[in-house]
Length: 288
Ligand SMILES: [Zn+2]
View 1 (cartoon, rainbow, N blue to C red):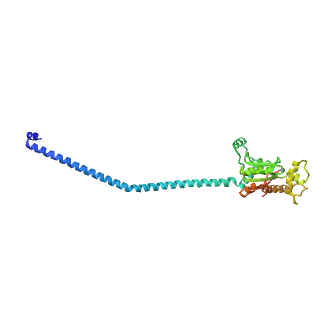
View 2: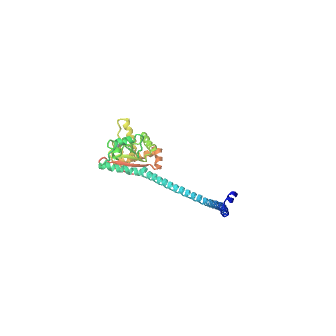
View 3: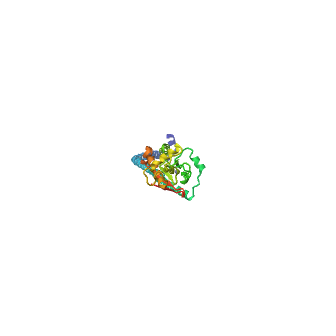
């Protein structure tokens, strides 16, 4: 530097020295200002983070509130869905299982039969759909008479009605056992005691004549008590519609008297309908 100063004219040396001083001061100042700026920056950062810290709980609270709201909405939606499901279930119970409604449905079928407008039975598909089980809605206790087939006269298909038939629609122990099975295990909610006009078994019982076999005698012996003390249908006379109705009444009474299971089921909502069938018109008429 000394050498440079010696070699250069004095004025230039002074100029150079001034420039050097100026550059030092600039560097110093810029250093100061940059440190000041970084200080400011860090301060502002601190401020920002402090502000953020203050804001954070608010945000968290807001998040929690939103979560709660979402959960509430979800719960409400779920409970609404559950309620709707319950409603549907109740509707199903009301619609599907009431004995009176099942009876109405049987009557619709009987109208088809009377008018000759049977619904076409899809026997093959019905047969296939019933391979794994049955759930008949109604139990019919009817006479074995070939002119009174319940499936036809109620316009019902396979699996729809549980039919027990014998001569004179008598509820003997085997018949009662069959009905109990349908009540207990298949949960049918209606029993129809179905008698019919001009019933041969009733006529045989009313005649009070001795039967040629003990098995035939067993039939009339079970029917005869229905006419004891009756003036409308005296034993030894000719059968009429009153005799048929008296036999139906007795069958219904015996069903309840002889079967505690059925008696209990009636208390819980099982319906028993007494009905009579007219051979010429095809009509089923309710008696109770
Ligand atoms: Zn009969």
